[in-house]
Image (cartoon, rainbow over all chains, first blue to last red):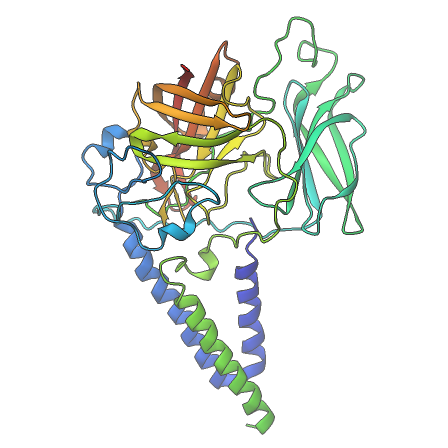
Length: 237
Length: 200
């Protein structure tokens, strides 16, 4: 989730500029220009791809890639995209088998979102209106110790499978708790940490109280707000 | 220009050249500018995964998509966590939703694209009512779901009740991005949501 490479590169550039004088600076400038030019060319390739839109709009779009993981590949039309095999999920049979998304006339260029850098030893909690939620702790060195959330019972915990630097604790508010704010603490790599816990709604004393008789248990324990970010524009038009 | 400086400068020139070559030579895998690169993949191994009953694989024959499933929860911002953009072919199960096959809406998500290539759900928009979705579970069950409907909705009007609300039977939600890519927001405007029911 972090952008360590980006930060390192930036630091690199600053260090070089400060210490190397004109010659090195000129070469560095060349590198920067190269960075600016080459990705732009690559981005141009991306801009010529078909956007992932609804089937209604895609009916007029040219052929798109498909995958051979399943026994049926009815949408397969073109040869494999170079390099795509290296990006398959671990242990999965999903494989892109058909080629490049087809061009469109749009000029909008996709970009990968500038994601925030990874920050170690921070955490936050999010609790749904049924009193169940998740605490997340960033701890690259390993599983945090001394995790304490006095207002909650921990149902289970695991490492985030999408990024092993994060640790997830599924918790349920204690029946004695009332309010809409709480905190939790932990130790990561010998350092103490503390995080705030947000509540979707106040707990206790009202119709929304967890465990209120007659209120059905939520099948989705915590419902994140808003849409889900599952695209980065690589195929956007 | 001193000898010392020249030595330093020489090393710097070489380093800068290497930097230039390295960054411009990322080839098809990652040619984006440094400021716009997808974040580097974490090298921290997952030694303590979710260990309850879980879905292990999803397959959509209609679009030839198949992936194993990692379990995701929420990120530090309270949003639903998603697989790394470096692995756009990786699908995931939201571990705070029911296990597919249990009563309720099981949430499975996948990238439409990432890392300059289509993602596992790139063609989810082509799924239609009646199409089959196969989900395998860690307890050995293999479940068949049939698509009931497909929606494309703006992210700022995400239908939380329809997606996350309780159901009286085992259902599946497949979610990815769609619609227009907003360059300023670095995000697609919409989500594509497929609703499916367990049939076997």
